[in-house]
Image 1 (tube, rainbow, N blue to C red):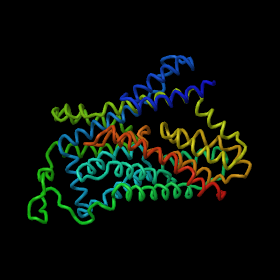
Image 2: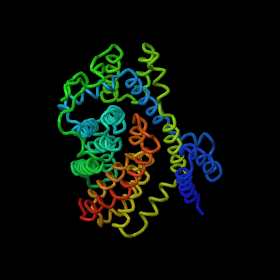
Image 3: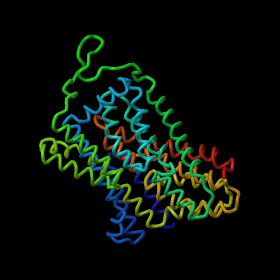
Image 4: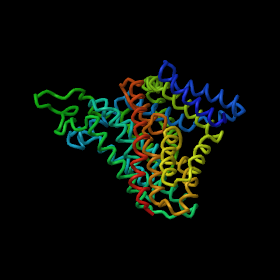
Length: 423
């Protein structure tokens, strides 16, 4: 049995044990990375640690730390009520507002995880307050970020179009952008209906300090006031957005620095916030991605991609490449997967049997629409920033939803974009 097949079987075993026993999948994945890396691939410990997602670790800790501070001093409650007032108290509109904000941020140049890091904590705080499904709100944020993620001036769009130019393939920037936008918009609409969006209040609801229909004042009127701590936290959140979007600073390092600065002035809030960082989630995500890094270094991903491209039936190979993009991207970098798979598709694209424009759009959508998986950066941010939830249950919901995206989306975009031979 080849080393690549052994590494895949070990991954399957990790999933089986984690789902049947009460063991953190991240801890299992670290053990698997050590076993496979040392015993099968003959990697050194340093080589194995090279796959540890240090940047994602800092993003998860930094963002959850900053927004835990915001929850501790009531800033998120104030923002929730301000958002309600902006839409006239209509709760049903808020998920779509979050979708639009996330899409706008990525369309103008924010990396998708950065947009999700900015929007998801507020969106999920809102979901907790108004009893909206956290899966619905998290999905709206992630799909919104992916919907705008392939505009001609976006990070994802620029990278994919650059790969297309480098490989001398025909491309269409507008088709790529609109395909991602339409697919994510349709998925968001389906999720909105399935997760109870139609049952959300469409008429105005009372917010803090306002009078309800029964003449009583809405609860928690103090949430409508701006205290010095809340003003400073709002300034920190604005600074985070500016730092990430205008100066391209790292979202994780910026968040943790701002959180530390706030903790210096309000240490009681800071102490409480540190305890609310979702450490089990951090262990889970970092462990799984460390093992995926070992797989990548072993050549397992390239092994699977090349095996598919050698099939000899272009349409079937195209579908399988879309599936590989979806499956691997659910655990790894979407851009990295696209960067690897598009060149693998070059040989049969050059034959003219498959339209390049449609194939590239199908690959791009397949590799990004699954980012709601709890093992991807976006899904991990949603999981880590959801307050007042059964985290194990929410993790399973995100994993099942991500699995549905992996299974359902590739054949749909393949039928719509590849089979007609676009490009």
